[in-house]
Image (cartoon, rainbow, N blue to C red; front, side, top):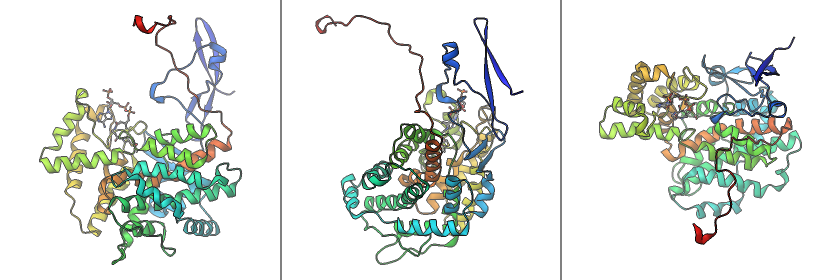
Length: 427
Ligand code: ACO
């Protein structure tokens, strides 16, 4: 007999179905709770709320497991490319050789930006944050592709996703070039995804950027590790926006906005700023850790802790191992890596972090890798966005395909009770 959960309110027993996921995760299905009992649940921060059933990504936060469509992140990191992983995350299976070829041709064809959009980069101004530019330009794509505002079949979805995954890299590179007062580099048809991005970022009219294969591989790895992470803040945002039947471009643009925050994707910037601060001021890492433990300080140890992982973030482990290799290839001896390693060692022995199960998350090491690749600080979260596009697209696709209801949480109102209007001269 199917498992159920019983809830007793005022002596009356209500029974709710239990839903079991393919990895044994259990949920009490409370969709009829309010209709049957008059009660709602209160779950500030949604720590205990399943907002959907999804086939895309599995995380076991206690064991430090992350899988996309059944494939472990370790396997994907070792054997796959970002584009192949993107296909897997969006479509559910690793691509066949024909599908890979087709997608690769589409990405090449879609890499350009319409010339009309180039003035936008001037309008944003030299000091505009690239995350704001990225989000705005994704909405500009909605203006330019009215034919894709309603996606009704697989071909349209494939075209929309190819446009986003390909152009997001061009937008990011153009935003950077504009901020540096450098001419735009147009995408090169013969370069692969990561090579092309590095070319658009760093080639000079007088000197094409030469990409070391290990650097290209490291960028692939960075993007694979960010490809999806189930119902985090930005992905839930994409789902919430998409649930109103908002178009794909605008929904992922909302994801960029959510990711920007320092408690989410913006943490990769905060980590490097913190490490630079320690390096510059000569303060001890311990001092920063003590400050993070003090609730009144308003500071956290950025790059530590996670809502779901109560163990090592498997992505952080993989990145930590590759950072050292990349630093050697590019010939950089980054003191920040040493400081990060020291901080990790101190924090992992500190009862505050042990008791709360706070471990390094992906952002703890990603900034050091991006610095080694030559990326400036304000592009770090943009890089995260490029990596996360497949996950946002996959979640949007899954949402619209399952015809879910508009997302609309409830609340417990705690404000003033009904009172008469006070005339202006009586206030
Ligand atoms: N530094 C100091 N204390 C922390 C940290 C931290 N980085 N993270 C959590 N804590 C403390 C909390 O204050 C809380 O303490 P309390 O029990 O005494 O009140 C306790 O640990 C438990 O916190 P959680 O409930 O697990 O934290 P929550 O799930 O609300 O937040 C978050 C998760 C936002 C990631 C948090 O750990 C944090 O702010 N970390 C720093 C920012 C960061 O690195 N963000 C990137 C996350 S990964 C990503 O988005 C890609």
